[in-house]
Amino acid sequence: MVTKNFKEIHNNTQLEALKNEVKGNLFEFLVARQIAIVSKVESLFLKNVDSELLTMMREYESWLRQYDRNLLAKLPLLAIEMAKDLSSNIEGEIKNVTVVGKRHDHIIKERLHEADIVVQVQNIKSGDLKIVPISLKLVKSGANITTKSAGAKSIFEKYFRSYDSCLLYTSP
Image (tube, rainbow, N blue to C red; front, side, top):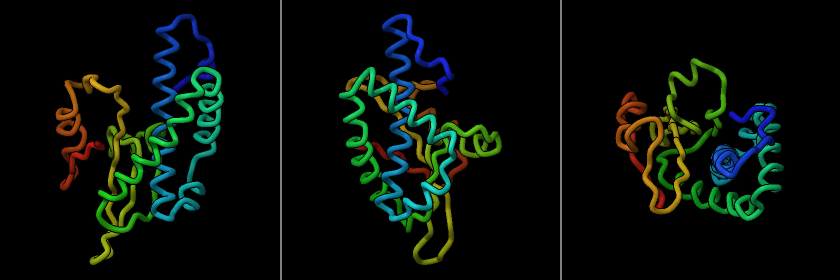
């Protein structure tokens, strides 16, 4: 999470690192909101968004407007496309969408591991509810995917093995 002094930048490396942090957080929020819009549950999504998260997103948007207006203009467009792709690959009726990536609740974080977004889905036939965790990674074209481990496969093996029907989905 970016601290209150996130505007202090001393070199280009810090600028790029901070831009990546801000970009990732805004993207998660925008994708979650777009999934909610596509699924017609936006009002519930907005009702449940933590006020601190909204404040943080406004600060990030303002900061990005100052440092990279082009990126700020593209993020919502990317989020719309990602949300459409994700929504079309989730089986069942989406009932709720939550951004969990920046939550401080340790019980939630322990259960959801690396999830950035959680979608509550109802099985159309049985009526059963299930949770679909979504982890987003923005990667520059041609770059290797690495996070806290050796790559995408190990991320799924380590953090998502408790989910019976975990599907690997990559957007084209």
